[in-house]
Length: 73
Image (cartoon, rainbow, N blue to C red; front, side, top):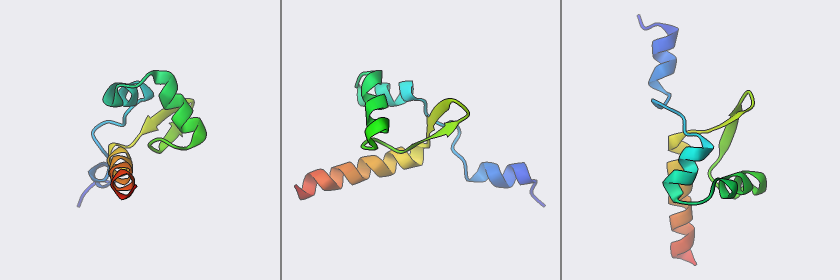
């Protein structure tokens, strides 16, 4: 029988991304990442205490959505 930690861990990424990671990934200034979050136009993030984190799967889904919107335009 799997432990609760193993079960939970199976659905989580190895590491959640930070705003710095997002800025580096998209080669944009960190301030742009904060503006995206404020305007709700960038990849969806969530708070862990006072820290913002991004699920890599949600970032990939957001990128795919941006690509499909760009192709449709």
